[in-house]
Image 1 (tube, rainbow, N blue to C red):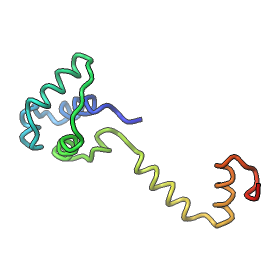
Image 2 (image 1 turned 60 degrees about the vertical axis):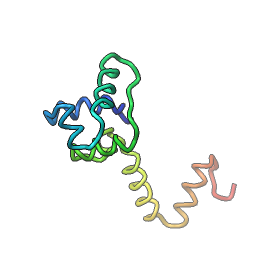
Image 3 (image 1 turned 135 degrees about the horizontal axis):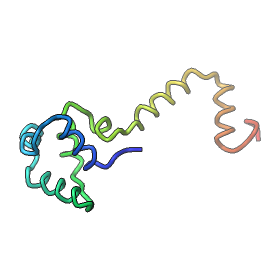
Length: 107
């Protein structure tokens, strides 16, 4: 399960030792925006930013946004596709039938 951006950012800031000001300078994002996000998150209020700035922040920290949020969706899909390509046509038909709730491919 992915983490909230606020939680990921708080952890990444602590690990980096950077201040919000330094992070914003490195990422090229607005200090007031990120300060407000952190203040809201610290109070338990909903806290978010736009995806463009989230990506910039992650990259400034040397991470992808997926890594920062611990989102493994792309990795898992890639693994599933790789395994799928290794199957024979018969094995694929069996899996498709099972996924569709049937015991036999002809059902």
